[in-house]
Image (spheres, rainbow, N blue to C red):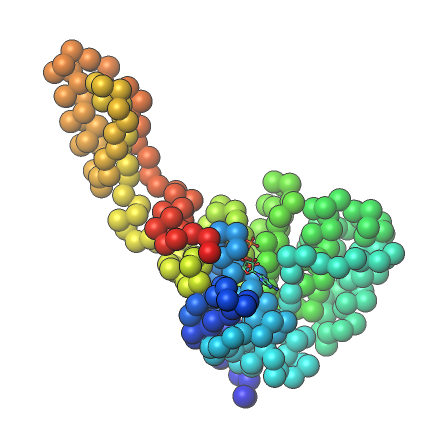
Length: 294
Ligand SMILES: Nc1ncnc2c1ncn2[C@@H]1O[C@H](COP(=O)(O)OP(=O)(O)OP(=O)(O)O)[C@@H](O)[C@H]1O
């Protein structure tokens, strides 16, 4: 297949994968544009890593069409591999080397790598450049994984739960780094269990559940307008927790206050609260409504 920079970063149709009798992916369709950041969400065991491994060419699909930067991952030429960056969920033993040595070594595998010092700065490892990698903390080792994934200036980066183990400050630094990669035009496919991360980073999110992508949209639109409708909750006179969804929650609160006053409770019902569903609520509804883990 001829590769052009106008081909999508990722194009997947009807991807299935089974392990023995277990069908983990059951007809996944996915398209990621050049320069787009896409977050794949889903509960533990949904098949996110499996899907990413098929796209990376380290796992064979059972069926379906897969093109990554215009090539099939299992038949792509060596030059294709230099155009993608991989940060897997689990990485190997770094051996007796320092981050500077490891990044420098990996840089030699690519035609136009980033300078080692730039990578160290990007991932916030400059102060630990000469510490043995095995002596780094868990979060610092994860930054090193990210460094090795981006040193080759990839056109597409796969990041499988990249910020697991990061402290809040490191996560913010990582987000800024990823914003920088996106500004340079790299496409990113990210998995994460942190909904705020998906919301901050992704142009679009997809929810993988029951073997297929059950919802896909920009984070602010996931689940549709209905899912974003505010929820008014309160305890009624019998102490029972009530909920009402309404696009005009103020009117509901006014009605409840009026009803309360009419039964001699001028302060209104107990536990009166108005909530606007967050991405996390919408996500949980989506996976709950679609069978969750399998
Ligand atoms: N090599 C394998 N052989 C058999 N089953 C496997 C293999 N790899 C994964 N699985 C199973 O496939 C399912 C999907 O696993 P996968 O790691 O892709 O999920 P995930 O969505 O990435 O999960 P998590 O969020 O926990 O990382 C799980 O039930 C897992 O046990």
